[in-house]
Length: 519
Image 1: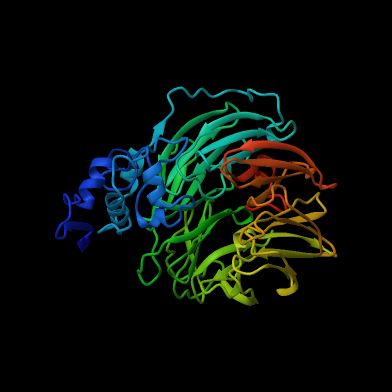
Image 2: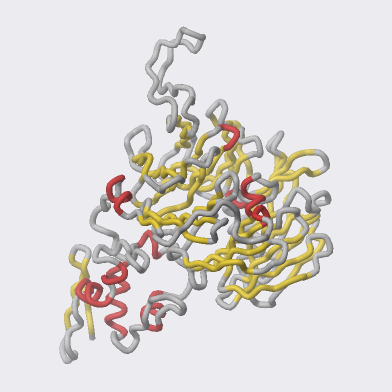
């Protein structure tokens, strides 16, 4: 019988009576078989970081299967004939142990990770004849690539490798030429859509949540879990502009739940995952001063206080009753709707005045980051799926009342539409009906059709083309596909084989903040 005990972060194994040769210590096994690709410090190299913060977010085969059989279409080899079951188990236990201390990953380390593709050549105009505003990026998580799709002909114009485990939506510069893609390991990749070529990449964090681009397209914000920072990069050359150590007013460090652009406010908005605060960081060099604490008077010329910050990257804190884990903005970016940590309610925050103004009954962990809005019978409503309940909640954003609850075949993950489309599309991501997608009439709020593109296969994430004429749906499987539907007739018009396609992102819809798409 093999038994083990833990000392510090390494597991020391020893053999019991009658056992064969002792199993080597787990750290030794890791160094011999894993460190060359995943880093001696487990923070990643050619392979992803092997730390709890990353491992618990990865979907797919179990670690024992990955180590034993390898990963298809990657550099991960199979170790099943090299390592025994006990040795594989030892490595798994080792990589699940948290790091003994938070690694340093500040401006110097970030800058040192920056690389520029030596073969990249900028061009004066697109190298293709497709409409550059109707181009899609399709993230294929099956083998960590992105396909660049012509949204009129539905043909693939380029397919390029990405960092491991891309997470969150890519972000485009305002004119739609450059796109930035982020991985869970904190790598940010810059790609030129006109040249169909990678420009370079940089590691902005060690475990990251998502990215946002500023209104003027000059700055990219990277929300990090590890370390607990917000990194701001120059979109021009991927150099480091600023690294914020994220901590609440009481000094407690916090992860960042997510960061988004607020174009009407010319700022980044982020929520702290471990503290009851929302941050607004100005992206306008002429931003007004921020005063924290008591101010004697706000009358013109009568301010008797010192600003805590002003101008570019000025930081304003908004206190809320509890940490917010996920959030949605009204189209004018005046209000933020956040999900409470317990997943039982939503809270509405007026960003102008900086305080909560309403609560919403949203049980079942609403996925507000996938919320969308549209006009229903002359009023502006928003809707959100729920990760733990088979329903969609529709909310009037004028009086903050839930006006309709739409029952579905299971909990969903994504909700999408388009201002020129008559329907809202909602996937059923979890449970036995994960092969279904509901098509809902915007006016009646009734499900008019349930599509099952591939029976038994997970179907998720809809994105429309520039005009709203076509809806693209992902078959979220290793041997998957992107299926193109006529948005009016709901008939299939094309099917493109893809390797586990997750998100699809249309240039025009993203840069114009189209109704019905995530931002």
